[in-house]
Length: 348
Image 1 (tube, rainbow, N blue to C red):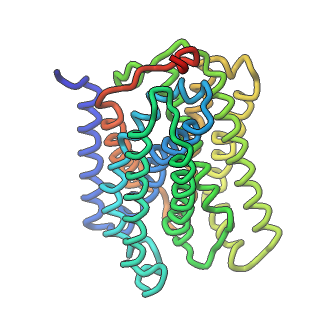
Image 2 (cartoon, rainbow, N blue to C red):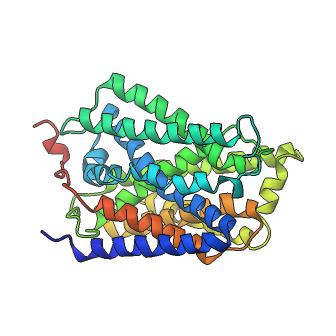
Image 3 (cartoon, one colour):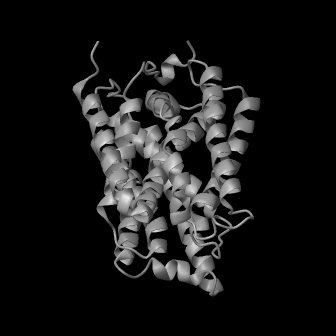
């Protein structure tokens, strides 16, 4: 049986966009590597966040996880791509990280080894979760707790390595938690989009109420907003010469407007939509809120990385997002999909 045409188109987009980034890398290696990093940070958050959500639901249960389970498991199929698309970052690390030529924590051999360990661990945890998951989504508590601890510790370290290391002198103790919260938020937003309508031929459109998933999405929006504001307040009030420049670079050259857009799309708009019960039960309203979160999160990944490179936004940044994203969606749209379980089915 032939794959649906949209999937074939996605594969073509992934190949063409990635090839164009490779051509840019021939003459502008630094720009291509930087663009690839930002795109990787956005797309990698989707399977990582989906794994977080599956592990939490495997311990706690709830209707929200049953509603979103087919989309979450489809998203986990992209986890092996984290290894494939990490390769260009490792090859271009010298163009991205200022301290990578050293011999200590940020030295290239140790940096690359840690990155490989993170990605291998995430894939192993995903395989373990899928192999142990019951039809109703339940997971053995011993496995789920250990997997969550390992997953959170590794995502925090990855955030320090891949983002905070762009400016070695800058530190934030909650930065790992902030990045992890953003990844989980974006993953839930992505599966909410899929749950609201059929995407790429995946028969996941449903008439089930989205009130329960929307409540979880609202909680994650509040958590991400709280962590973002707390980090800003603590650093701004500390007024340390080693910390303030990080925010100053992101408040000039047009990046201040990007920051405003992030605040609107990733927090304000979804918050005011999801806080109102009639809108929270509307598929169209949830689709708008989830789409806004994804747009804001992509802008956030650019905002977190590109100002440290002292360059303007380029075509390479958009092409990298298209190249990685089309490949992710191509794989997520293939393979068998788990049947939708409703709360009343969970006990059968």
